[in-house]
Image 1 (tube, one colour):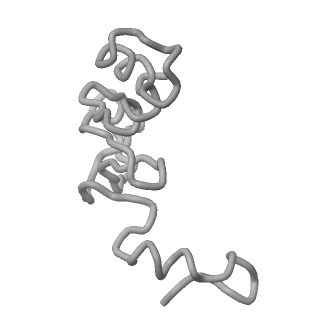
Image 2 (cartoon, helix red, strand yellow):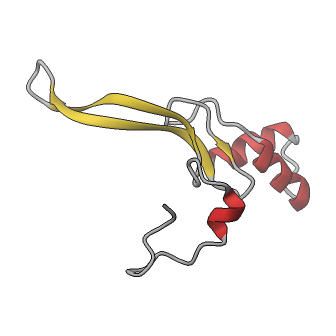
Length: 100
Protein backbone atom coordinates (compact mmCIF):
# COMPACT_ATOMS: atom_id res chain seq x y z
CA UNK A 1 0.00 0.00 0.00
CA UNK A 2 2.90 2.35 0.70
CA UNK A 3 4.19 1.82 -2.84
CA UNK A 4 0.82 2.68 -4.34
CA UNK A 5 0.45 5.78 -2.15
CA UNK A 6 3.93 7.05 -3.06
CA UNK A 7 3.42 6.24 -6.75
CA UNK A 8 0.12 8.13 -6.77
CA UNK A 9 1.92 11.19 -5.41
CA UNK A 10 4.38 11.12 -8.31
CA UNK A 11 1.70 10.83 -10.99
CA UNK A 12 -0.74 13.30 -9.48
CA UNK A 13 -3.20 10.68 -8.18
CA UNK A 14 -4.08 9.59 -11.74
CA UNK A 15 -5.05 6.02 -10.77
CA UNK A 16 -7.19 5.58 -13.89
CA UNK A 17 -4.10 5.34 -16.09
CA UNK A 18 -3.11 1.75 -15.21
CA UNK A 19 0.15 1.61 -17.20
CA UNK A 20 1.36 4.91 -15.77
CA UNK A 21 0.47 3.83 -12.22
CA UNK A 22 2.29 0.49 -12.56
CA UNK A 23 5.36 2.19 -14.02
CA UNK A 24 5.34 4.64 -11.11
CA UNK A 25 5.05 1.80 -8.56
CA UNK A 26 8.00 -0.02 -10.15
CA UNK A 27 10.11 3.16 -10.13
CA UNK A 28 9.28 4.13 -6.53
CA UNK A 29 11.83 3.68 -3.76
CA UNK A 30 10.31 3.80 -0.30
CA UNK A 31 12.42 5.94 1.98
CA UNK A 32 10.10 5.83 5.00
CA UNK A 33 9.41 2.10 5.09
CA UNK A 34 8.95 0.20 8.35
CA UNK A 35 12.20 -1.62 7.55
CA UNK A 36 14.14 1.57 8.26
CA UNK A 37 16.20 1.65 5.07
CA UNK A 38 15.16 2.45 1.50
CA UNK A 39 13.22 -0.36 -0.20
CA UNK A 40 12.85 -0.72 -3.95
CA UNK A 41 11.50 -3.35 -6.34
CA UNK A 42 13.69 -5.50 -8.57
CA UNK A 43 12.96 -6.24 -12.23
CA UNK A 44 10.71 -9.12 -11.12
CA UNK A 45 8.59 -6.98 -8.76
CA UNK A 46 10.09 -8.31 -5.52
CA UNK A 47 11.44 -6.05 -2.77
CA UNK A 48 15.14 -5.26 -2.36
CA UNK A 49 16.06 -4.25 1.20
CA UNK A 50 18.62 -4.65 3.97
CA UNK A 51 18.52 -8.01 5.74
CA UNK A 52 19.50 -8.28 9.40
CA UNK A 53 20.84 -11.21 11.39
CA UNK A 54 19.70 -10.79 14.97
CA UNK A 55 20.43 -12.26 18.36
CA UNK A 56 17.89 -12.36 21.16
CA UNK A 57 19.29 -10.52 24.18
CA UNK A 58 17.89 -9.49 27.52
CA UNK A 59 17.56 -5.73 27.97
CA UNK A 60 18.40 -4.03 31.28
CA UNK A 61 14.66 -4.00 32.11
CA UNK A 62 14.59 -7.82 31.76
CA UNK A 63 12.63 -7.98 28.50
CA UNK A 64 13.93 -9.92 25.52
CA UNK A 65 14.94 -7.92 22.46
CA UNK A 66 16.23 -8.65 18.93
CA UNK A 67 19.67 -7.06 18.65
CA UNK A 68 21.12 -6.84 15.12
CA UNK A 69 24.57 -8.42 14.86
CA UNK A 70 25.05 -8.35 11.06
CA UNK A 71 23.54 -6.36 8.18
CA UNK A 72 23.44 -7.45 4.55
CA UNK A 73 22.63 -4.39 2.43
CA UNK A 74 20.31 -4.40 -0.57
CA UNK A 75 19.39 -8.11 -0.56
CA UNK A 76 17.22 -9.25 -3.45
CA UNK A 77 15.46 -12.55 -4.05
CA UNK A 78 18.49 -14.03 -5.84
CA UNK A 79 21.14 -12.90 -3.30
CA UNK A 80 24.25 -13.25 -5.42
CA UNK A 81 22.99 -15.68 -8.05
CA UNK A 82 22.50 -14.55 -11.64
CA UNK A 83 18.71 -14.20 -12.07
CA UNK A 84 18.57 -15.91 -15.47
CA UNK A 85 20.60 -18.91 -14.26
CA UNK A 86 18.60 -19.12 -11.05
CA UNK A 87 15.26 -19.08 -12.89
CA UNK A 88 16.40 -22.01 -15.09
CA UNK A 89 16.78 -24.25 -12.01
CA UNK A 90 14.02 -26.75 -11.19
CA UNK A 91 11.53 -25.98 -8.43
CA UNK A 92 12.63 -26.74 -4.87
CA UNK A 93 11.88 -30.31 -3.83
CA UNK A 94 13.44 -33.14 -1.83
CA UNK A 95 15.55 -33.96 -4.88
CA UNK A 96 16.59 -30.34 -5.59
CA UNK A 97 17.55 -28.13 -2.66
CA UNK A 98 18.79 -25.16 -4.67
CA UNK A 99 21.86 -24.18 -6.67
CA UNK A 100 25.21 -24.76 -5.07
